[in-house]
Image (tube, rainbow, N blue to C red; front, side):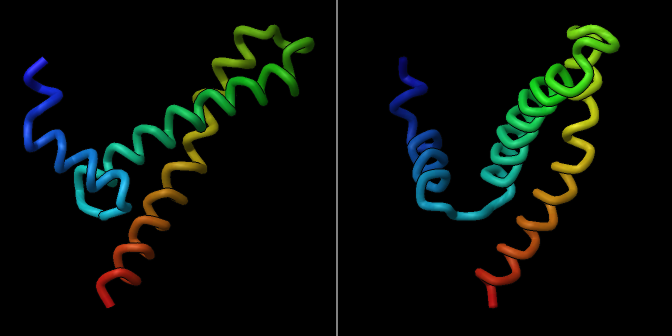
Length: 87
């Protein structure tokens, strides 16, 4: 349980909560957003094409195609936030 009391983890969690943008927090937010996008894509795929091609296959396709639009948008948003916060 010493990892919960380490200064590195405390600094990381503080920077995540305060909205400080650095490489580590951006990568963590990118992973979180990608996971949420995959969940949403799977649900959307099951709703749209579940009866036609099967629920498992449509969920897999939705989960694979959803981050294709999400990841570039997130990266552009991070770039814009970084530019706006620095200037």
